[in-house]
Figure 1 (cartoon, helix red, strand yellow):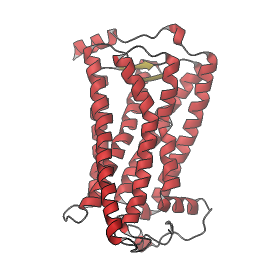
Figure 2 (cartoon, helix red, strand yellow):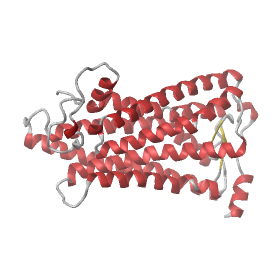
Figure 3 (cartoon, one colour):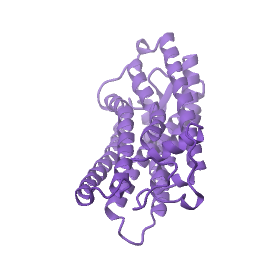
Figure 4 (cartoon, one colour):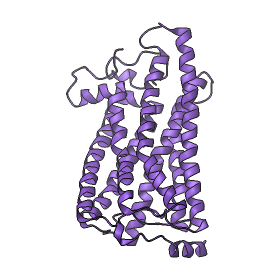
Length: 339
């Protein structure tokens, strides 16, 4: 392991100075990062406040949504400020230790979001296809899924700290990440495993689960059509729309970055300016996730507008706060929508 670490450090790709960002480029990056920091922190903070204030929202699926919002908030607190300060000055300010911390924390929190989205699809699949099976508490499953998302992410983000690949500056030198440009077989094996087990595998699980849910929802529509506006399949359809939108937004944010990383590892060196936009798109996922909550989750949006004073309808009564959205019962009168 020690030999591999020395080899990987010596083989780190150094991008040519001609590809460095201009002062105007660093300024534009700083403005974009400042906007993402403000919007991401504010939006995720509001999401967490709404979930804390309205216990009716504490369903098994929403526990995973809270986990995603928490990881996005941590990116805003521990990651984005460092890259913002570096862009303002045009160089890293935190030293090698700070660079490794920035890269590790961003990788960890970003991976928690992706893995949580994958486990959320599994939770929805279980509810839609296996909810009649006894002996399994949905809240216990959700808590285990939250713990599993952090453990799985740690398994894949700690190795660069121990010598399997490494963390260091990327692009124009104002941000840090896995050293995608390392050309050793040891470093490339890590990048390939990361791509397979932390992108393709979660994506495959999402496609399988949501495809199965769509089949189940369509079958229910043909058997129990017209059972009422609050029928189980319509609530499942709303949750499905929410999660698919979140997955789509996440992939739109992270696919360009993943392609740049793979090209750097197995193709040719990517100029720093070409790394900047995919990196900013990746950070924009911290803003898009809470926006999806507000626009597509009807129960959450009703509670959000009530909390902000834009809706005067009373909150749910205390005795009905903990109804899971998958149960075949109407949602609370408040903090829900009428179809």
